[in-house]
Length: 155
Image (cartoon, rainbow, N blue to C red; front, side, top):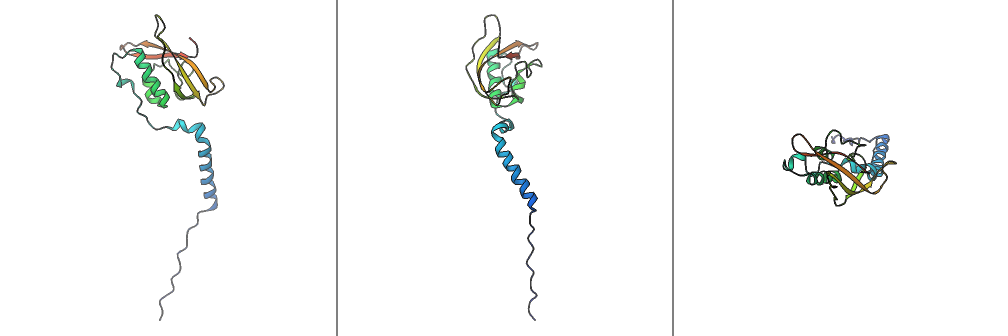
């Protein structure tokens, strides 16, 4: 008596529709990365407001905010601002990508308003891709700390 013939195991085939969908998702992801992928950055080492000394001046606070802004770390950036500092009132984090931040100038005499050059990418009609001067106003809060309160492209 001979050994029973073994039947080869059937390979499970992946349905063609699943492969087509997988390839389509991959193509869309690769094509969309330059436009939207920069927004998906993981947490960065950008400073948070609690990492600065309580007596940090407005320039130091603004410089830390700009590091977080350029790193795309809005969670860190938002620790340096007040509730009035929003998209449309100076806040850019979560909007266009900030490719570069120039040296700070200021504050203007008698104010706590600073200016810097920002290089913008992935902007829109109201803020196209370009380099521009951006102004920031900081005010001392009740707890004595400096926070960003407003900003924009004009004083």
